[in-house]
Image: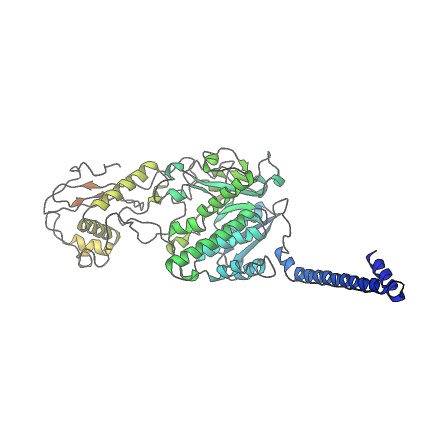
Length: 507
């Protein structure tokens, strides 16, 4: 109709049927409409050109839409490819394949991880060069490994399992019969349910968390992208705080857990639940969880499912009917590069494995230690060093009897020098990290009850001029308890001469 109208107007103009003034007005009208049409055609051309160039990159070709079911694929990452796995790692992998013959399996390695991230988040994928850049910049392998699992789960979804996790039941058993797969977007389990420690200065950030070493999700879930973006912001903040590029930042154990590990994972999941439910969602909904429940399309399984045998949080044992996996914790060597808080005398509070009495003793003893004069702190550390080093211990045993003035080996003679760190009361005390699991005790056990702590710790203060006598049972789990007695001013001290303000002996 529009073209016919133009044609009739043009014919009228050319035929000279209209007066001169009318023809002049008609000419301007026709010219204006032609210009408007040209602008419209140009705009359409530009739009389709831009769409072809950029619009398609907003959807990854592997998973263009939200999946109604969980992708039938098991994902893992490790330093090397499966052909070079150690026997124990290969055994874990075989458990997944044997129990899930209908699922595909893929492992990414340190060698091909970057190429994968470039593929899924580069220009041909989700077009997020910031994510690709940060991943490639990282030198902290544990941060890179955590980030990679979230990238995989966002891009493609499926089942994630750390390399040291053994499958006990097929994936089909993860979803209880009362739920339908189409009603669930994510499957997770309880790792630590110890809210009584949520305000503890060291344990608080780890006291309430979901398992991160095994979970399942559908592709392109907002929670995974939110977690990835949180990690980018967190890393940038650490970089600015330390005044270093992201590839050079230094992180301790707790920073890893809160930045990319279980704590960060848990916070992201709870936040997504709240958005989906349009209400506040807290850990209270999962405390003492005995049966699975769905909140915000996230299926949460009791601790026995993915954390059986850890000896806390009512985790049960690996023989229980609700146990889906067994975590062997042998791939936790990353803690060597990211040390836990370790007291020079009492070790790591995590070794208490959430035992209330053990934690109480650790807190009291470390607090009492910080009240001692610097000189006495150094002496106690020297004595601990003697116990830990056989060569130093043999040298010390050649010194005069206990009632003689203290003579330390040359390596420990001067407090504050040599192998004795300078300490200030009230400051956090850190030391070398042992190769221990993220969940310290009972990681390999099948006990259905909570495991006892490694050992109680105790301090017994002497009278006199303030020097301390300490009877110490190490949290390192040694078979023989170490008994150290240091006298002051040449006076003999006995364990029974406790001062009123010293922690009491509990064995």
